[in-house]
Amino acid sequence: MNAQPGRMNQAFIYVTSLFFAWGFITATLDTLVPLVKSVFTLSYSESLLTQFAFFLSYGIVSLPASSLVAKKGSAVSIIIALSTMVVGCLILPLATSLRAYPLILVALFVLGSGITLLQVAANPLAAALGNPEKSHMRLVLSQAFNSFGTTIAPYLGARILLSGGVFSGTQDEAALAESLHKVDTAYLLVAAALALLTFGLWRVRSYLTTGALAADEAPHSPFEALKSRWAVAGAVGIFLYVGAEVSVGSLIINFLVQTLGIAHEEGGHLLSFYWGGAMVGRFIGSALLARFRAGPLLTVAALVAGSLCAVVSQTGGNVAEVAVLSIGLFNSIMFPTIFTLTLERSSAPPASTSGLLCMAIVGGALLPQLVGRVADSVTLASAFLVPAVAYLGIAFFAAATSRKAPVTLAEPAQSLH
Image (cartoon, rainbow, N blue to C red):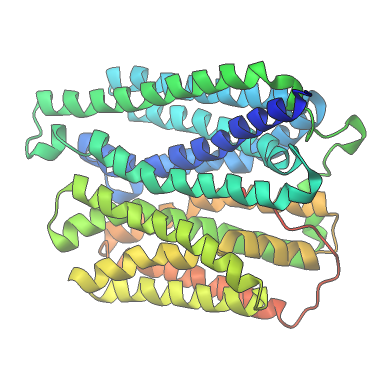
């Protein structure tokens, strides 16, 4: 019996676990924000520097990551990415022992850099490992596990990071030390899991070359796409979407604590409904996109998400709670739909357009800073008006695509978030 299909399936399982891993780690940041805010006595904008440091890596590392994958192939690139992520996790205990918030930000940038490289290398593999006729099924399955990671991470993160310590009602030295020790525990566990995953992938590395770029297929520079107004418009859309999604997710715990009077740990548990809504919405969205045009559907989703943000900013109590947790459901289709609508209309090479869109994920670093400043200078509820405006911009982009027919037959984009 030929053992190759079994080994190929094993490789696919490992690659799918990568989708779960980066979804889990990214969503864990939402529980880290209230912890560093309390431990280091930070303002909202200062605590949201965690998201700035993490998502800044997309703007800086995406291009060199693409070049590395083109030169070294998928297998080596994935091993380098995972090793970089382990290093980022190991820097965090050093940062907490020194009580150095800037070093925590360095660790998160290193961790984000590894995830950026991981996404660039792993996305093609999910579709390539196996029967070509089932490539879309494999990609959807892998992305479902990514959403599963973002759904359970807030719950587990809240259990570890947002209980006891500074959240027990005291701010003495013992409470601070306990909370910082919880950070060490959480990220050392993540580092151990990543190390085991690295070992497993190394064993099947010969099967990870399937989706690697050939030497003569080096990616185009994303800056070539700046010549296409549709590529630029799509990049703005991605920038606004990721910025809005990260901003809302980062504020939910503190907002629920403030508006409902609950504990931070309970707020972290409720955050899972925000990310769980995005997971469920991807399955619902897939069915709706099979029946309705993408542009109008994206317009509706963006307008509803923006309206929910406005409701959050003007209400309180259970109404605001339901509204803020429902935003994730309407976020679900935005990233891949903006991606595909842009690829279909851009006059630039698909590789260049994709590169520019990936770099635009840096919106997750910059927009939360504006949100934090509004929260500090006005109110936390008012800060939700910033993502409301961002969703309005996405709706404008989506409506504009209805007036412009596709000019290319691009393949469906692979979600990077």
